[in-house]
Image (cartoon, rainbow, N blue to C red; front, top):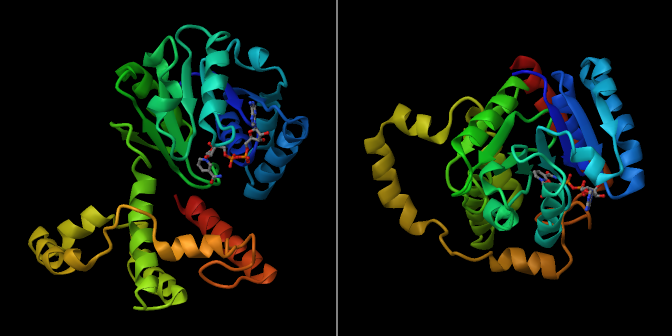
Amino acid sequence: MSKAKIAVLGAGLMGHGIAQVFALVGHDVTITDSIKASLDSAKTRIAANLRDLGDDASALERVTPQPDLAAAVRDADYVVEAVAEDLPLKQKLFAEVERHVRPDTILASNTSVIPITAIMGGLKRRERALGTHWWNPPFLVPLVEVIGTEWTSAQAIEWTMALHAAAGKKPAHVKKDVPGFIGNRLQHALWREAISLVERGICDAETVDTVIKASFGRRLAVLGPLENADLVGTDLTLAIHKTVLPDIESRPLPSPYLEKLVADGKLGFKSGEGFRKWSPEQQAALRAKVVQHLKKARAED
Ligand SMILES: NC(=O)c1ccc[n+]([C@@H]2O[C@H](COP(=O)([O-])OP(=O)(O)OC[C@H]3O[C@@H](n4cnc5c(N)ncnc54)[C@H](O)[C@@H]3O)[C@@H](O)[C@H]2O)c1
């Protein structure tokens, strides 16, 4: 992939990390943010990440903070948006961006769950609009889901997949613009049953997590569920489904148990208690453990 001009909108948690990934492989990256402090600190945060990971510090020279949106996107081949998860904000931003970019500039949203169709539907040239769903932190988790709408051109998808593959990411093509794309649908199917097990008194929250981490969680990074189904046999998978699926949680709504936690102010780390109680030390230890694990996996890739 030849050098591209990339504009990243939003210099928060995801935006600065996405800028870092593209700069590291040689692209020129302009980053913008509506909050001055966020934009001003972007390069410092990227520099710290590069140092921490032992990555080439010169990547920083290819990142240019630009407070003016029009100037940030004017020459871009590719624009990726990572502003707050707010539909009207994203719609307004892309309408503005479209006024300043070339007709063939590809426009991507890093929304977590908002349908790309809803964000991009009002654009004049919808064939160049798509979703790219990164995972946090962008420089440690390899997957980027590339989501097409009914209007997205095959070329735009192909170019975007190639851009991310060449940046060392694992792009996955999501062919239909469904809520949650692929990764979050799978993740939340598991979370629904995890919460249900606690709600039904089958085990406590800590046990759910222990069971996953000490069993199939160990294999998941190298053995996907459908590889696993083939490995044990689709006939055995069918037999298990006949017994287990009728009893598995299938409500199409959030769990009342989860709703009560939220209503009671048990919001997880930010309030010190969610499914479990969390001291500041326990929170810091868990965060550090996850980052250590992801760094080790990246080093082994
Ligand atoms: N945090 C995650 O784990 C994660 C993972 C995948 C996708 N996402 C998605 O990525 C997007 C960004 O999430 P985040 O966690 O980086 O949020 P964040 O709050 O850390 O950063 C958002 C940034 O956007 C800026 N911003 C707001 N309005 C703006 C505007 N009009 N123009 C320019 N900048 C503006 C804010 O000042 C802020 O710096 C969201 O859509 C989110 O759902 C987040």
